[in-house]
Length: 172
Image 1 (cartoon, rainbow, N blue to C red):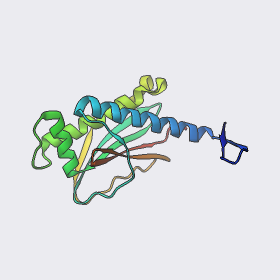
Image 2: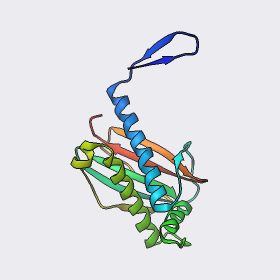
Image 3: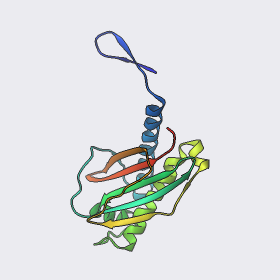
Image 4: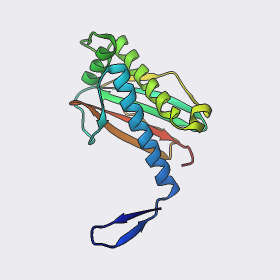
């Protein structure tokens, strides 16, 4: 529970459910993980951004989560952003989405999932990560059949935008 002044001199009480609190914590941890991984591994800062529509093909890396949390973390970007990420990691930006780009995006997703779960003591010790699965192309959709909870966050590094999503059945 927290109190919020509404500017009119009166205070009102805002009740936050346990689910809302947990989702807020998960969001904050995800924001922190994205900032840390991108600053450390790519040498750039990131910040949350408004959702956006990407033109053309896209690249998605999926990391499975199992244990105290069951679901997946997905890093999704346009092809140009995926090539840029790979270039930041390797020093040479490729002209197409090749094996190096797929490996780089998969590794970034893996680091994001590891950093994110590391901020929660229970997840840190009781949540396992799968190896990355990377999908690239112009005509695909990712679905999570069992995930009752979905958290999707958009980010930007300069003008480059990408999305990180969590799909899980963890009892929030």
